[in-house]
Image 1 (cartoon, rainbow over the protein chains, first blue to last red):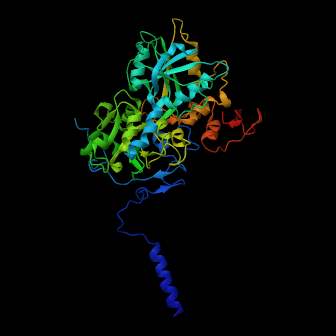
Image 2: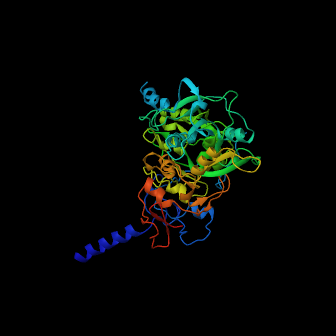
Image 3: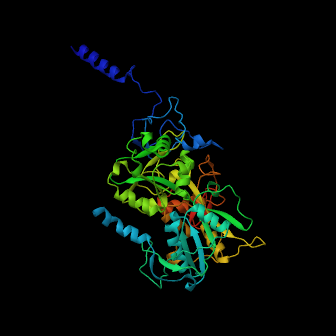
Length: 88
Length: 398
């Protein structure tokens, strides 16, 4: 009986640790909409020792500042993520 | 009605007392300044300090106007004919505070060409013409621009892409909740607030959707009185927003190619402008201060040059002796601007790419001590052990 209990417990632990193969969220997706984080995240550039970081590295440099993530896309955004021209 | 009652004190504080305006020339040592209306809070504080500057007292008399209009005024020497504003000295009104109204005065007959003109963004965003040889340009404090919403709005952030559709397409952009063009409050085409945002979201200023307002105070009033606060949005200079944090909320902004949205400050509540200084908040411009030169390339007005030196962090002689031992960093930090010497990034044109920046004489520690807590070491003169430079009581990095 004790062995069964241990087996069942371990099964639950492993099941909880496994990812969901059907999860639609990309592996590098940021946290959900409007979550705020006050610690450096993994998805950032450490520019501490970079002499001349690029613009993109500067604006995405690691920081402890509050971050707000928005994942929803505007309905008119092109499928490739580009912007359509402005209406005349 | 209740909303109207709430904004009356705010509007009253912005409007100069105009009754029986006296001639501006009656004021001692006048200096005429035409500046962006986002600079009003700074000019009020500096004006008060200069009135009571025991080493070099003068009267800063200013007219708020659009940056592009101001550039043209000094490039083309267009005289100011409208009533101007000034603040009283301690002796004239000891109870005056920066939230008190200014006082109106009438310019000299025929008008007066400003001694100093201010653009609150790169001049190149207004005109492709280079300045005449008789105009000198100086880079002053940095100002961020924000998108603000009413306190009752639940919105927290806006992205580059959303802003492109909201202000470039209006209702047709279908970005909820900002789909009501009558509830989107923007500025007219000569204003730095519009042009700075235009450069950053790649929507030319003349193509913006929304209600165009001539003054920041009108945008504030619109936001505070909107019958539908959730869909209301407006653009402001951070200097204006910082004075109204109890009435409006700033949206975090995610720039093009950025992973997250950031506030100008390191958090919604703080006032450290850390994200402006390190490049995480991308919508900012240097303020440009212009003066007229003579045929020998020397400033025409010594008083104007003195004020510009103060604003741009250069040595001003005689050293200012402001009441309460205030410094220029105190005045600049108090209104939400960032002195150039506290910046860690720079750019060459409006909305242009950021690069790291090291000012010749850093004031990061001094600045942070005014707006937040600083981790910098304090020092008696010459005792920095970390290789830094002791300046104003702090070990600055250079």
